[in-house]
Image (cartoon, rainbow, N blue to C red; front, top):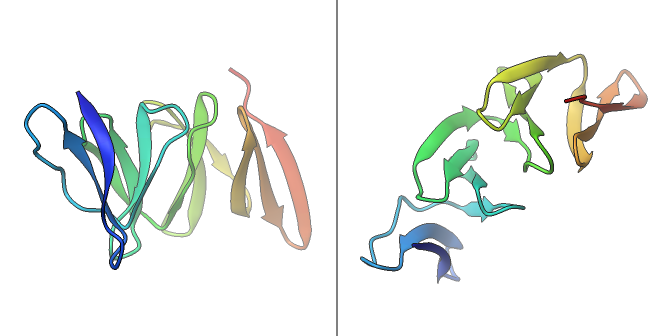
Amino acid sequence: MYDMYYIDPEYAAYAVVNTNTGKATKLYKSIESVDGKLFLVTDFNGNKGYINSSGKELAMGYSDAGKFIGDYSYVCKNGQYYIVDRDLDIVAEVNGTKVCVLGSNRFSCVRGNKVYLFKVNE
């Protein structure tokens, strides 16, 4: 069984801790999750990625990424935004910047000086 624990308020370091062994994963600047299955993490260099509930890193190195609300989220690598599924496979390229998750499979992005809303269909 794994739980998340706050480790040090001065440095705001977080880890996933195995409550049976007391063993912790690598430390992160932040760990967030909506469903407790996939966790959005930020390391101390500002890189974002995902870990599972056991603390295993599934993908790292994104300059921006979002929490999963529904079946999809977004990531940004090398300045390009993508929509990814829960297997972290790319399902769409986003023609825009500043992508945000608005709700279950709903997103917004900025293109030029306009904000666009879009939904990813299952």
